[in-house]
Length: 343
Image (cartoon, rainbow, N blue to C red; front, side, top):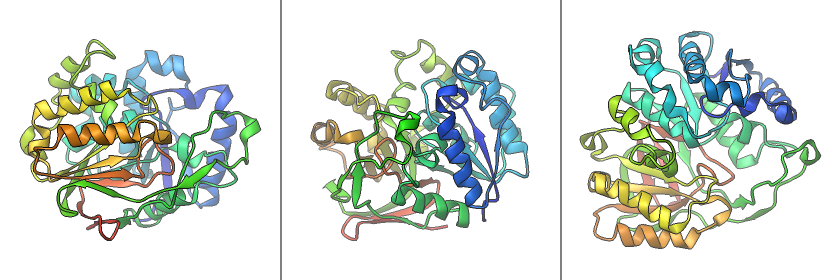
């Protein structure tokens, strides 16, 4: 399925509507149009941070409309944030999302992990790993080559056939102003997928996302009602749903301290997740901060679990980013440095 029209939604932060970011929005819009794509911003996507913070129902309405609009082939998230769980009552109280959804491409990462779990609950296959503002609107002369190759594959074929490691990783930008337009990011050699434990070849359907976002389903330290709301609408898959799957975990731009990272891993461990999954794929931490610390924690916490643990995947908050299909049968082959997907 070739994508012809993209609908952009702001399901978390409303930053896309702020004046200080319009040079990025224009750049992204031009890039998509050069690819021959039609582009529509859903009605509330550009309303700004304050409005969308105060109106989660407006964000939910945009998601419903994006799925209901038959002309939209791909729903592309603007960026992440931290409170998309607040959309739950407006999407599930009266089966609103269930009645609206149809099979189309949904792409986003970070806090959008929660939206992926919403759509998984309804049986939809989704795509994790890129978003409009951080990827399509990248300030360099062009989209980052590795990132662009996966984005183009998705819009041209409707799926991703395989993921291989990036040869480089990039230091994140500090300056997103117009002064940075056309400026390249600093890059460093990357080292490929790293097998930390278990067999280097395994299969299963991938599900997961940003560990900080997932942790809010189990812990109220960010907002006092996340656990109750997520339990009420049964957002997180039951243990039996994880049987034989591959868990994807990546870390946010918050660069969580190792003590918090251990706490988050333990929350998933206590839930029993690591007793169900075939393997765990772990994204490269942003700017390689706590790279060795996170690795050590995973090995310590999962040493007695019968699973494969693969580190340093180019997905999520570390640049560049691949795109990971959720819900397709995957074969991970660390020796050949590839993850293949069956369509």
